Each structure stands twice: as structure tokens, then as C-alpha cells.
Figure 1 (cartoon, rainbow, N blue to C red):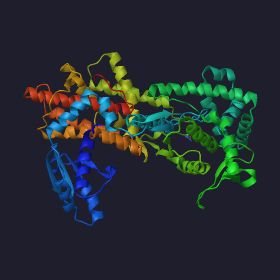
Figure 2: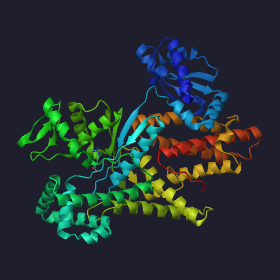
Figure 3: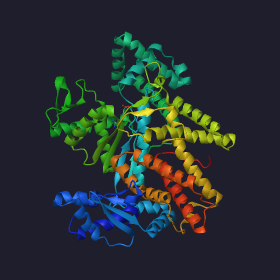
Figure 4: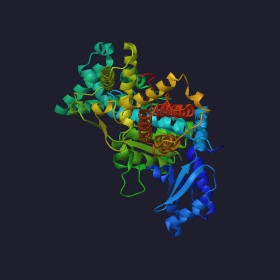
Length: 575
Ligand code: ARG
């Protein structure tokens, strides 16, 4: 297998480190682009890393390693304080890489990530609760989860998505009680979702005044759990209505799932786990006849897996899910994309699964923060629920306004299509470009603008690059035999940024952070725009220069389109 892009450089450095008498793991050998062209194209801190262990001065170690570098790909190698090795590459190297990229983009990336063995992940995201409106945190989970899935697929993994829909739980009891009290089935059937939402809200308002209502809800749920025929029938209907409603949102977002095994799917799969846990002595008696799993650390809290009345819990179903995933797919990685409010719960779940020995796969809770609205009117309160469909409509509407303001040269129909791509894309990009572990700010003015780190800015940039190739009547692949001439600093900078793409994907996958891809694309767009604004491509001074610049433009299109895919964004053809 041929090494690709930065891995070529890493390979050479690795060899030089060895020859100089040191040792370093390839994963710890970092090659980064430099902030300033006077420090080379790329730079490594490996000498600083090794000097500590060897008790030597970093600059001396750097010199020894640099002395062993034996390759024609470097135009220049220099040391810099306190122990960096700065590297300048020959244009020929860049041209070779560019040719490989353009010749078969897919293959190039696959070979960049060549895995020694097959790797598999199962991912659970979105998971709204039926009988409740889909909340903003479910939107975050859907968008982040879908992107993590796509990034892992790009990274060479097989990925299975399984939506753990909340189709059981006490909210059903509440809704059923509300339907019985105030509902009219014929009216509900006509337009179920708004009707159910109204009843749900009404229940919460009334329950604040009358505590007995909650008991009624609980009693309804118990009836359902015990298999009461009427309750089961009603439940089935509610599930079907809600799934149809959810599907509309999924279609608009362009997300799909391989499986939709909700909580109820595990109703008959819990007993064996409980029995097995009892036999092993991992599940022990808790208060009042309940069953619990004790933690290893005394300060941790036990996990309740069966209530004293024999009812199971959310955690019991989640344990059954882990076992099912293991039996069905035996993946290397099990991922749950769930808001940070459930971190404590996932800790509990994971130690319980370890004690039960359900799987050896790595279980990861991919946590994300809350959505913070710049516009206070938009936060959710009982009685004033923010509906996701309204949010998507509003975004498309604002996108259309923006397009009309800019006065792009498109037909009415093309404008609407662009507004859809941009409206949905802006919602997604706004979520994905922010660090998921902190709160995510939602601000229309920053999302829907052609300036700054926004989806419209990126879309505008790629449309621009595409129009250059269209005018030259070329497809990206047509440019593969051209030669790169990177004489201007900005041309070099752009190429260096392009080279960072595979490493960016690797990092985004390993840290489960799509924002690395988003911010990479933003930097790339900025580099391309300064290149484009300062230089003519089609009117370049010479034929060679024109070809080189077309080749760069072709690479920008390829990589930006690919990055868009990983974030679940559509690429506009014209703008
Ligand atoms: N349905 C749950 C909620 O909305 C989230 C489910 C998360 N996934 C899981 N495997 N527990 O709170």
C-alpha cells in the first residue's frame, strides 16, 4: 500500500528518528502545517517530545534527526527554537499527490486510512420520545450523530445506525390519561400530532394544579405495561402517528437509519439479562424487593434494573440494547449521541454493562451541550413548544430573503431550491461548527449571512470554484495531468491546507468531533477566496500558470464537496 500525503512525510521522519537512535510511536509523530511561511510548509515537534526522555537539548535532538532525513521530497529542512524541524516540500511532491487525488478521489482517501483489519461501529442518535414533541436536543443529536456516522464511514469503518426511539415510558401514561379525560378520538385521528401535543401540554398545566393527575398517569402506564388490550391498541396508534411525523423531519434533514429499534423492541429481551445477572450474583436485592447492580467504587450509586413492583426501567432496556448490538453485530465501538444532561446516567449504564459482561466493545457517550437561543422568544416552555418543523420553515424563509437581497441570477424555482439547501444547511452547520461539548449558540444573524463561519459562506465559495471550472468546460478529473506551480505564497498556503484534509478526518473521527471538519472547511474557503480574489485563474499570465490554478481549483471542489457530505450539507450547483 502506497502512503498518502502527510503519511509520506511521517514515514520519512519516522525512519530518520530510528536512524538517529531514538524511538517514537507513529501515532505520536505529529506533522502540522505552519502558521507562517518562514517556518516552512510543515513542521514537527518530535524532537521536543524525544528530548525530555533522552535528557538532551531539543535543538540537538532535532539536528540529529534532521541529519538522517534522506529524501528527495524536501526542498529544504531547517531547525528552529526550541526544537522544531521545519520542512519545505518540492513542488513535484505536491503535483504527484494532486494527481492521485484527482485521478480517483475515493481511492486516495481509502488508502490514506488503510485499516489493517475490518472495524465496525454501531451508533444510536436522534432517539426522540414518542408521545412528546421532538425537542431541540433531539435535533442536535440527529445532526451530530448523522455527521459522526458519515465521518466514520469515510474513515473506512462499517457503520450501522440504530435509532433507540423512546416508544415506552411514563409519558405514555400521561398522554393516555389526557386522551381519556379531554380527548376525542375522531378529532385526534384527523390531525393527530397537533392534537396530541395540545393534550400533552394541557396535562402538564393541569398537573401543576392537581397532583393526583400524575397518579392517574402512572396508573395508565401500569395498565399498559401489564398488557391491557385497550392501552396497547391506543399505544400502537400513537406510535404510528408519531413515526410518520418524525419521518417528515428526517426527510427534510436528509437523514436515514438502518434500524429503528426503539425501547419497546427490547420488552421481551430483558428477562434473560436479569436472570443471568441474578445467577452471576451481579444483580442483587435492593430496597423493598427491587433489583440493583452495585458499583465497584463505594461513592458511586447503584443502578436500579427492576422496581419493587416488578416494572423495568429505561436502563434495563438500554442494557438489553447493548446485548442485542453485541449479539447482532459484535462491533468494536458502540456510540450514543445524547445530551450532556445524561452523562451521569451513561456512566451508570456503562459500569452496569461491564459488570454484567455484555460486550467488550468500547462504549462511548458522545455528549453535547444545550442550545442557547440569542432570541429569547425561542426557548421552549410548557405551553409554548418550539416545533422543529417551524424552525426549518423559518430557516428556509430567511435563506430565501438573503438570496433575494443578494440578487443572484437564478430563476424563481432555482431560488427556492437554493433556499432549501441553504436553510437546512445553515441549521446543520450552525450545530456542527461549534464545539459540541459546550453550549451551542443559535443566532439567525450569524447563521444566515454570506460572511464569516456560516453555511452560506461555504456554499458561495464552492459555487464560485465550480463556476470557474464550468467556464473552462472542465471536470475536476480533467485537471489531473496538469503541473502545480506554487510560486505565490497564497497558492502554497492553499495547497498545504488541502493536504491537511485526511488528517482532519482522522482527528474528527477519533475525537467524535465534526467541528474539526467544519472549521477545516472554513479555513479552506478563506484560503481559496483570497487566492481567487487576488489572482486570475482563467486569465493567468501563462498557460502553465492557468493549468496549475485550475488544478488547485479542482482540488478545492473535490475536497469541499467531500467535506460537505461529511457534514450532511448539499452542494449548490450555482449561486
Ligand atoms: N429517548 C431518550 C431521550 O430523549 C434518549 C435516548 C438516548 N439513547 C439511549 N440509548 N439511552 O431522553
